[in-house]
Structures are given as structure tokens and as C-alpha cells.
Amino acid sequence: AFHDCVSLKNASAIPGTVINLNGTFEGCINLRKAPIIPESVEHMYETFRNCKSLTGTVVINGNLLTSGRCFMGTEQPIYLSGACSEWQKELLAESANYNNIIY
Image (cartoon, rainbow, N blue to C red; front, side, top):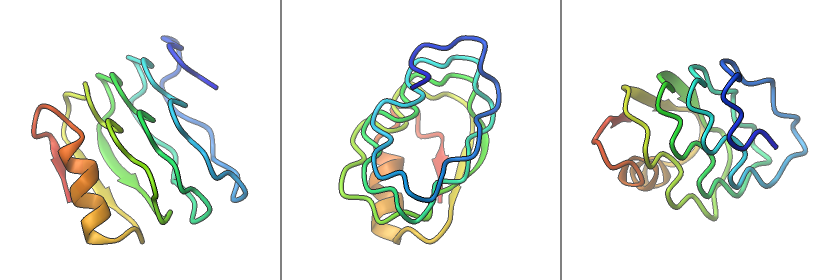
């Protein structure tokens, strides 16, 4: 939806019916604040890949089935919170390549 949108700084709210966020914000290099990820979301493959400015708390409430490379290429400190399980948060943290994800 917003792939490579360099002018996007803050993401809009994600509706509670969305299931798939694969690649949604990939390459949005100026995105600083992520939306709250609702319970309905199951897929977050490469969702925030290469979002170099993304920082702060990312609330993930979904029960994720896919999340590979979700935070790859992010560089700023990112704190994961929300209702997703601890092992899902661990997998999300492992998707980053700069050890910048804290949960």
C-alpha cells in the first residue's frame, strides 16, 4: 500500500479487519511511527523492511503466522509491545539485522 513512500512519516490506523500487512511499509525510509497492529493481522512479512527512521514502540496485537524480515533494515531502537506472544516478539526481533529490537 505504501511501499517506497518516502514522504510517509506517520502511518494511519489499520482497520480491525485487515489480515495481511506483507510489505505494506517496506522502503518507507522516513516512517517514524508505526500504527497499532490489530488482532486481526496474521501476516507481517517485510512489513517494516528498510524503514530506517522507524523508532519508538510498535504495538502488535495480532497472532502472526508469518513475520519474516519484518524489521530487516531498521536502524533505530524499536520496542515491541502488545498482545502477540513472546515467541512471536522474539521472531520479530530476530528479523532485524542491527539488534535494535527490544521486547
